[in-house]
Amino acid sequence: MYARRISLSGIVFASAFLLQEAVFDQIKLPLGGFSFFLIVALCWAAFSTPEVGAISGFMAGFLMDLSPTSDGPIGQWTLILIVVGFGIAFLRYGDDSLRGNPLSLIVLVASAVVVSLLAYLVLGALLGLNLGTTFQVLKNIIGNGLWTLAIAPLVLPIVSRLHRAILDTRETL
Amino acid sequence: MRYGGDNRSRLLLVILIVTSLFLITLDLRGVAVMSGIRHGTQSALAPFQKAASTVFSPVGNFFSDVAHLGRTRTKMKSLEDDNAVLRDKLLQQKSLAIQLSQLKSTLDLAGTAGYEVVNAKVISQGSSASFTQTIIIDAGANAHLTRDMTVICGQGLVGVVKAVYPTTSLVMLASDPAFKIGVRVAGSQEIGILSGQGTNTGVLQLLDTQSSVKRGDVLLARGSQGDKPFVPGVPVGEILFVADSAGAVSQIAEVKYFAHLSALGVVAVVVKAPAADPRDSLVPKPPVPRPIPTVTIYATPSPSPSPSATAKK
Image (tube, rainbow over all chains, first blue to last red; front, side):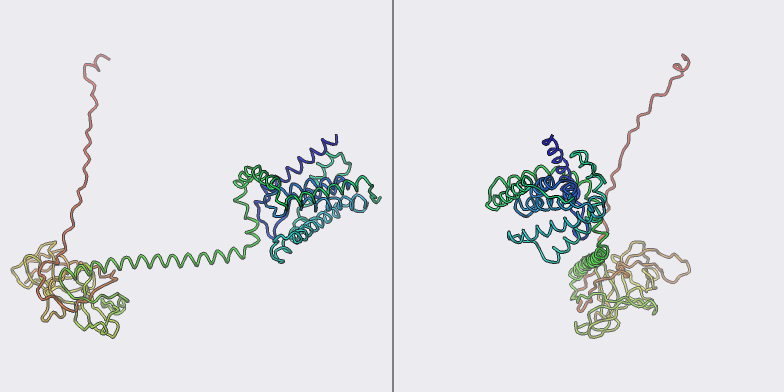
């Protein structure tokens, strides 16, 4: 049962990853656009328990590390999304005010996206990666946050239903 | 209810973090497996990316273009300006090619006759308000031009220099109503006076009452005393129409000028005539008729029904 859930979750992540790489990467949006895969992964983690959130973060982060457009070493996104996945699940799982409010969930996901990107930036700087100009980096991070606020309401209901179907959670939006 | 966590979840978190750190270390140390995984992922994604690119490439830049509409407009304006500059250059090149062709034919004509010429470019057509047929060329007294010099182009006579300025000259065209030139018919050597009439044709009046001309006869300049204003032998035009008038003292004909006086680009001013009259050497060669291929079609008549066959029916 546990292996089935993990493999089904993996299929969801792999599909979202494929969509991100094949479709969403083709569309050029102002302010750098958004990461569909990151939104799906963090929404998934937000609906999970902290342990599942961390495992989801590990799977999603590893897939993001495999992306040919990722310039960091393999493991960088994995490390970040483990912590952020655990954190978002921990915050939402333990806070009743967050659990029943979709708007707060959207804000939480958008904040998690911004935190993930900032963490990637800091970790990348520590590892000596060339990350571009400050203006460009700030524009991308702020743009990602704003786009996530716009896109997350569309993604959340789908992820919620998939999460309930696969992990058998009672909570839906 | 606040999630408190337990040792199991903490252990899981630590294992995952250590694993990710292990992956980072392996990749930073250049373990080939890690880069191989990334290459493998790209190979697997490539067909999907290509397929999606075919579908989404037309709309891929749409949102970006909408957002950068102002910038796109500026870029379009810049490209339009560049396009206009390139078009201008192309037109200039075409104009230069035409001028080069005109200069070549002018020099050919001058070289055949042995005229010493000064080349000049037409820089202005005469004003239509003045009712005269003139042009202004970019050579003047500084190029040793003087009044009453013959002006030619590749096809023949253009006109005569009427006024000279330091760097420019005013040329009266052969089509000017005040223009008159003594001409002779190539071959028969009949002589007459050709007058301009403001169009691309002139009027020839033969001096000898007994002489006659026919359509297609070529007229050449007779030449003036001291080669001014006209040098001998310059092709002028050909007879287009002969007016048959019983009461006329002498024969009159309409002449079409060889030179396209309304489309002059490069001309030459004859500054010195040859020692010997070129006679008929400058008569333009008649165009060689191109054979028209004939197509013969053999039609085989279909057998008509015989009366006996009809009767049998």
